[in-house]
Image (cartoon, rainbow, N blue to C red; front, top):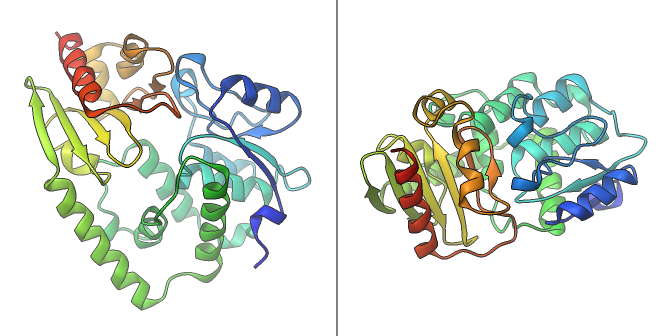
Length: 285
C-alpha cells in the first residue's frame, strides 16, 4: 500500500493565522478549531466545535455527503491529535479507500463516539473492535507524522480488517484501559466536578461519578473539561453549556457544548488543572 504521504498534501499547524492562510490558498481545513479564535473552515465546512457545534461530525458528513470531494485536489490542513473522526474524514474526502470499503455502520459509530461516547460499550457494538484498534494506536502526537501514520493505519484497517488474534488483543487492552481509568487519581471538587489525573482516556467511566470532569493528561500536559451530556451541560450552565465556560478559562480554550479543553500546543500542570476544576465548580453556583 502506497503511503498517504505520497498521495496527499497535509499540513499540521497549531496556529489559527497559519490555518487561515492555508485555507485561503485552497487547503481544506479538517477540525481546525482554535478555541477563542474560532474555527477555520473551507468550502466543505469540516468542523463541529465551538460556534460550529450545530454541524454534524466531520467523518459522518465526509463519508455520507462528500466522498471524494477532494480527490483531485487532496490538500488539507489539520491540528490537534489525529482522532478517528478527523482521520476518516481526510480518507473519505481524498478517496484514499474505496467508498464500498467504508461501512456506514463504522462511520456512524465513529461519529457517535466522537460526540457522545458516554453510553457506548464498544466491545459489544458492531465495528466497536475496529474503532478500538484505532484508538489503541500508540505514540500518536500532535504533529504531521502522526497524522500520516494514523491515516495509513486506518486505511489498512478498512482494507484488510482484523484477524482473530488482533481482536483478542484489542479486547484485553480495552479491559486494561477501563481498569486504569477506574484506578486513576480522582478528587471531587464540590459535589458536581471530578478532577482526574490519568494516563488513559476514561470519561466513559468518570462520568458515572460526577456530571462534570476536569481531566489532566500526563502524556500531553493538557486539560480537558467534559460534561456527561449536552442536556446536562445546558441544564446546569445555561444555553451553550461549556461554551459559556471556555472564555473564562483563558484565551484559546474551546470545544463543544459538552466537551473541550485547553489551547492546542500549550503545556499545563496538574495544579493548573485543579484551578480549572475549582473555577468550574464556582461557575456552577
